[in-house]
Image (cartoon, rainbow, N blue to C red):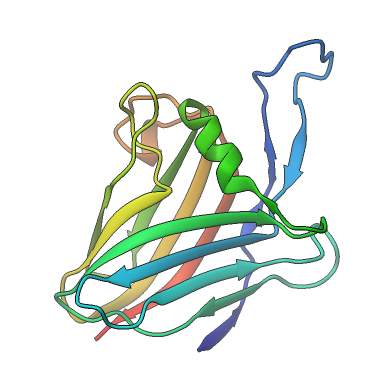
Length: 180
């Protein structure tokens, strides 16, 4: 398992559209402490887990990134994302909220630094637009670089990717990935 210090940007998961008896246009806010991306290969090998953890929220501790291993060139992975608020006991599963408010959320996947992978969405909101809690990742060839996972709240849907999505970034985490 590889450990990295992180300078990921993390904001609060909020509902700016929720104005039901709430004079605060920001609405209820949730702290995102953990993002866990599980990549399970189709060939039955061990899953690779990418994890961002910042258990003290906005406190002084540096967030920690872990990458449990390398991807295999030519392999296809089924991806899933778990988002938690672990400042509460028990931890709050924010993925459930994202799924319930599916038309107000979308994950985006940005690949950089020469990393040769592609992704596609496996889930859709109630209007047929992608969400990203479930996705497919193809590790095309041996390479290394960055895999950035971005959660946007109230993005423009449909969109052509992060460049015209608009909305508010709830969290953005970049993982260093190696395909061998």
